[in-house]
Image (cartoon, rainbow, N blue to C red; front, side):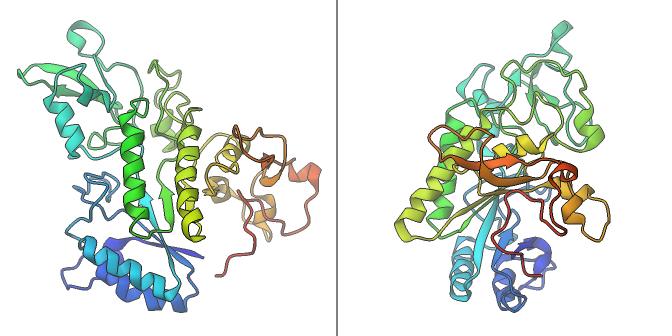
Length: 352
């Protein structure tokens, strides 16, 4: 069983009203008594907290609100003694507008290498006064914000699929995956057991950044609906790369490192691609949230549940032939009562 720990509210060790890593460490014996096998730590990185820490200003440090790296190391040691695995929340789709690379981009000229790490573009219309395309952000309003250039004049626009304080990384720039490789290794070297990946169907955008036929779909549904901004095929290369990194560490000591993706995509078949044998180990299956309230909701949660089985979703290049595929509708497959519909299926029922 994995227990999500929102550090800010879990346990305050200093009396300042804000939870911290020392409080998490103090609460580990309690979690052990609950039968918890692992904890997922919500972001504790330096952040101006415009989105509860999901606007990360430094991916390889601890916000002073919550402690420091020395305290994190103590937490890891205590968790290891108790046999509790530790997963970190990592946010690869976007960063904070306070991130040093974004601040450098704002201070640099259009077309500079610093701006190429993000999605900067000239505006449309007279004087570039209109956004580069018609996309809307998940939280409403245009997905573009215009910057003021060094000479004081209105300049380019930058893309943010969430808030203006969360500029989206440009994953087509090779510096971005290289930087996240360093971040993964930084935390794996400190002993973490894996990562929960925020917005795992994001990262890549359509290379032309064209207009959307339904630009307000994301804001209307509060979901990653825009097919030009989410679920691009290249994102699977990232998860294969990250899986290879995790397997490298596992080969050293035999301890598995887990990758869990927050994946929201239109169909179960597309969802299944994220949990192929050489990509993510697990992925959130949000269809369960809309399951009808029945005596056996898991058996009826999705008209097209997924399971691990040979064929027919094609495996990633070089992977094994056993992969995750979409199953027939329960109406035609006639699953037994209580049959689970999840991606991927757990080897045993979770403890509650």
